[in-house]
Amino acid sequence: MNRAMYREILAENLLQSPRDLRLWQRFTSKQDNDPMHTAKTTQEWILEKSLNVLEWPRQNPDLNPI
Image 1 (cartoon, one colour):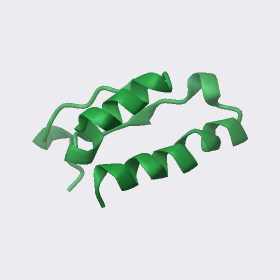
Image 2: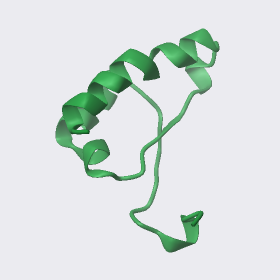
Image 3: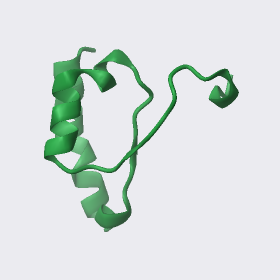
Image 4: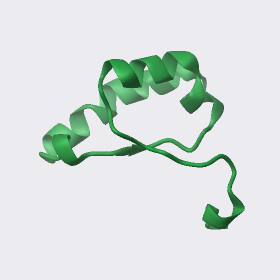
């Protein structure tokens, strides 16, 4: 998967799911600092759509469930 495919998935699914569940105002997305999540174009898309994103540290072993 690349950043363009990731943005397509966001556009097709991320915006519609909170609307269907009537959670739009309370919905927060989580990005785990994968390169496609941190790509400039992805970040610009998130800002353009005014999405709430949970801040997440990079590769923190304390937060790794494995």
